[in-house]
Amino acid sequence: MGDFETVTVVGAGLAGCECALQLAKRGVRVRLVEQRPLKSSPAHHTDGMAELVCSNSLKSTRRDSAAGLLKAELELMGSELLECAKRASVPAGGALAVDRERFSELVGKRIASEPLIEVVREEVTSIPEGRSVIAAGPLCSDALASSLASLIGAESLSFFDAAAPIVDAETIDRSIVFSQSRYEEQGVGDYLNCPMDKSEYETFMEALLGADRVVAREFEQKDLFCACQPVEEVARTGMDAARYGAMKPVGLTDPRTGRRPWAVVQLRPENAECTAYNLVGFQTNLTWPEQKRVFRLIPGLENAEFFRYGVMHRNSFVDAPRVLDDTFAIPGTKTRLAGQICGTEGYTEAIASGLLAALNTFADVSGVAHASLPRTGALGSLVAYATSPATSPYQPMHVNFGIVPPLESPRLKKRERYARYADRALQDLTAYVSSRDDLFG
Image 1: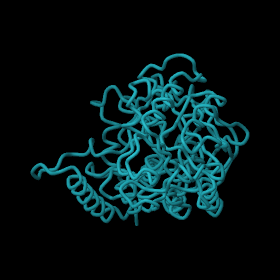
Image 2: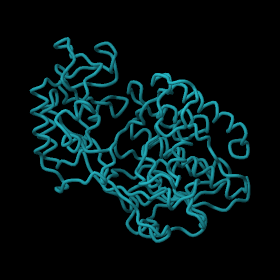
Image 3: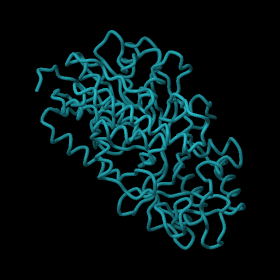
């Protein structure tokens, strides 16, 4: 073990827990500070480590998707939380979804088993002295956000985020709702599907558009990160918008009619026992009574009981290209940011950001070169995008193949092009990891 200075990691979410574990694995003492349960946020429900506050899905595992590629990259770099997620997985077709409680429990046990990590339960109201990683998430306390804004000399930007409702599986009408993943045989698949004909869809959309919202004003487009837009805001863009988005019926066949429905609402299991289901893509800002009224118009959910209603909360992120360097550090300080507060949006992205923060913080304390991941990769391209001064205006971004360097080969069909992106990325990252025993050895 090296004689390294102790690092304070603020926030025991996905990024903070991954960062703490990676630092401890490299012999660095960590003071992991979490304000829950002394003080909670509008989105959290527990005081557990790495609580998932919105969906329980970490997205696709297909290597020829950007989300799947990121998981492969995390595996190459030895992610601790990805391993926990695999152990807590629930059926979700080609996606990695987890039992929230099991996942949080596994991460908590992993943290508790690490003697170099000290967990402190208190609110952090200012940037800690010494070396620190701020992984407080997009819902960090007002005091810490104010301290951070003073340090970076710029106002934090903000947007609204929303979580979807969860229903009791026992209250789903299985005579209407059918099991099928897209393009698989009827009766096969990890999703339940609530089919709608045209009349049912139009009735539902009218109710959705007329329902009372918690935040009454019309949202400005800049306030809404597109991947987390409330379903009612999507509906406001056009009657068929939801039918071409979260409610698209392609690849599904209603066994009652033998035909593709006009629209569907998909339900994804929340736990391994499949006792609770999440309404996929149904993040919402409707009041709770309105959610009960409107969502019970969905065929098969007429008598649904809700374990959790959808909620909406304000998220903040910094203007990373203007205030952070290419390691997500604040220039001239010993403070680095990680997770969604950097604008790297998504669960797996938060884990990856925490891992990268640990690598670069370890580089700081051990005197080796910072990690400079290949830009051809999912994570490398996201970091490059998020820290490039040319990125303006800056908005939260998931990993995607639109920000990776183009291929030199002739024009290919999308799926083949994505497969080539993945092959190139993993080849480049494998070579990089092999060349950096000082970080990964």
